[in-house]
Image (tube, rainbow, N blue to C red; front, side, top):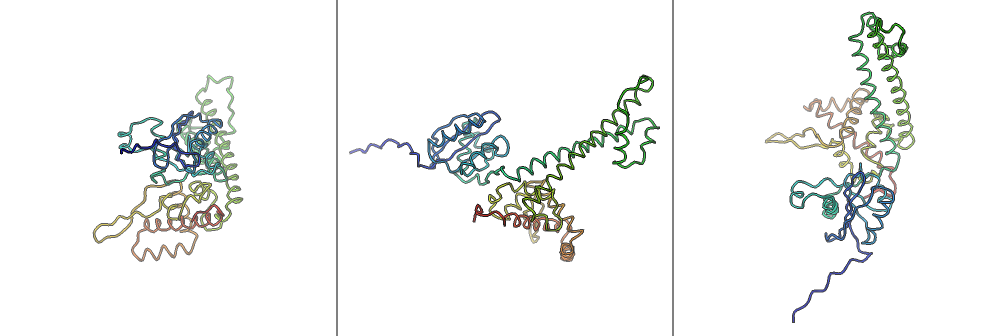
Length: 364
């Protein structure tokens, strides 16, 4: 007697499913997979509040969603990631599929969404998305505006000095020898209105107008930078005062490292993972009888630069760091190797200071 296979049973609502989302500016494409990897459904949703609600209701009808893989969780998928985290879903950041998978499966939004879910199922996607709903997100926005203002101010100062190179000799002699603050104040006092006899010295008048406008722009940007620095300092002092206690860690460096860590630092399982995220984890570079470690060029370079500034400050003002440096010099280490070790120690210290106040959400 030949047995007839029973028809495939549709999963019930209590069955766990995995959500994968390929995010774009206007439309997100979502795919729901069973825990065995079978594609249950795929659908597009608008990248709006209503679209997020529709996506969640649609996925919940297919099963219980506890894990989700989101492409671009820090850009187009940031709002969706926050929405899913609010519904107690563990959200993972998914990188773009490699070329071999794209050649084998093709390239389309539904395929990318399915690959995002498969990355979570297989364990390839292990990096949890940042929450982006607390003081660290505020610090990121303030830091973004500040860095942009600093860059624009530097550009304006360079343009102002470039104009002085080709200016009239009398004007150059008037401004010669002035430091940047005095130079900006002097140029800001130039009259930016056209004279009646502007045809007589049109170039000289245009030079003064350009210098005046650039100086006023520099003053405005300086005011914005100071205001943003004050906001950043107040935010760090209010939420993470323990970071400002060690030598060499200022508000700017603390904010940079907090941005790298995110509002949910419990996603980092160990201080070694934070060191790797900052690009200060040692990379072995041994050959033959020689055993050594080389520079790590990965990780967040802004966090790496913040750790470098901390180490440089400690080498100047911290006796314990100077003693360590002199001892390692005697052992035959180079200055670069010692700085790499010190950056690794600084990353460990920052991680332990922040993780100590996480509370009940901390993972084992």
